[in-house]
Length: 120
Image 1: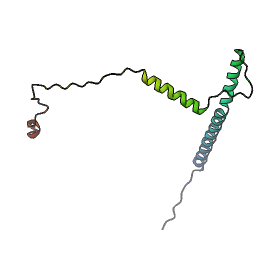
Image 2: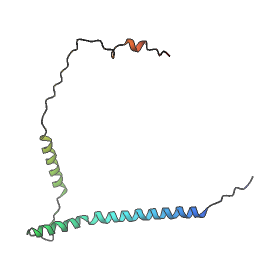
Image 3: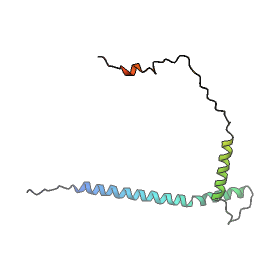
Image 4: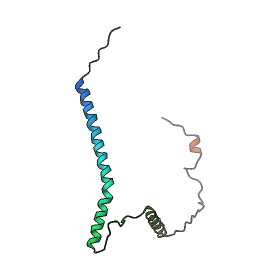
């Protein structure tokens, strides 16, 4: 039995490991950035709403909640859905079937299906 010698090109292996490591690092950095964006976006939006209310001259307390509770959002969405579905016109669906006097049609003829021979 002859021994098999494998020639390993270490440059290819190291390049593959480097590309894998860079890929994992980029994905982890992107996930961390998305986490912080979604974590602190409501706070930034609340600051913007508070400053807009102050410019309009309305008093806003620091502890006042400016967001809408989930139950209220669901009730508003349901009311809008029901209202918009009532706006559509009611159409009467009447289907009329008329008997055609000419009953023969080549599409419904059985003779073409029975003796269908291909001639060359």
